[in-house]
Image 1 (tube, rainbow, N blue to C red):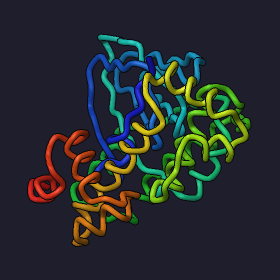
Image 2: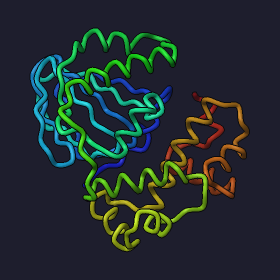
Image 3: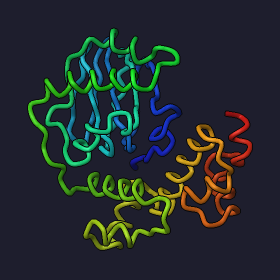
Image 4: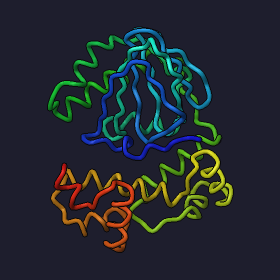
Length: 255
């Protein structure tokens, strides 16, 4: 089973931080970058079925929509950061079409992490720190390779299509037509690898974006509902409560 993380793909403020001991995670993917730095020990990370070892003083940068997992290493101490594509828009365009031959690189993690975790950091300053990571990564990367049309790539293409068209009335047939595959094949691919359906992923993406709009704008809930692709406010409220556990109004009040 592969997990599609819809909520961490759109974290509040565009970035998510986590410090761990013995980090472990099942195969998953999300439409965001993931940066992991190892303070102590080593981490065993699989990216698109290719194994990598990340030693102390090194980091790994995982591109959006790459299926990855982390083997439990009880002696490791790590820092994990997930950040939205919009924070590094120029590099995100490269990452959509390619992947790094060697995603592991050396970096002064303590310094950059102190910068990233500065309280109330201005957005443009945050972007500069993320581009600093990318600059170091890019300098150490032997080369970028075009993404292949394997399972993870096709799933990534579906998610990109959702990202660009979630506000419209779309179906898996529309995706199939856009990327040139039979929709039965894509449906079976989602069922086999993610144990889910296109409609479920679409709703999770829409609700994830709705959560962001509820806390970052003063737009009426009815307007947010339409912006997220729901023609019916009742349908929006029902899906929101099913996925989040509360109504949109309650979520806005709590956050």
